[in-house]
Length: 182
Image 1 (tube, rainbow, N blue to C red):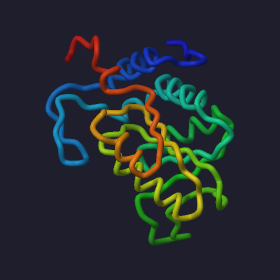
Image 2: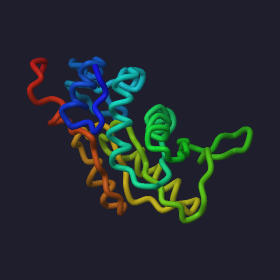
Image 3: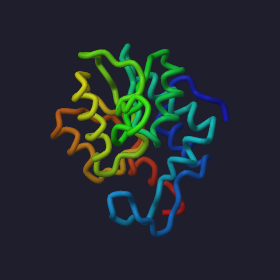
């Protein structure tokens, strides 16, 4: 698979499917609900070609801004996207660590700095909102969250209610349409 310069929705869907990241069955989701399909972020984030396509697609959408990834799931996304886009990044922990520096935000971040949060899969949007709030608490300006897959289960609405625009590379509809496994 060659890496397209400006990946399309179709390129990203194909990359996710080629990485076997879309699975079918009965799955419990992190928010407690169940689903007939699952998007395995660890399969697509550990597949070099898929990760390159995703990073390239994110980089196409990023202006000169600092990136942020939520630990642990979005760290590969933000690290590779940072390299492709040539932009710095920070990592947002779910809570401050109790050792070392005790930071919740890892990396260099200046007050009033514009930050775009990268997220793997958005379902309810809770983890993205928590990351946005943690960044805002230290003085960052966060108005956008980019996600690989929007499961279309309320994340966009929750982010909008927190004055954050969400942009997804693909939606569940994009990913599941024309899939003979559905």
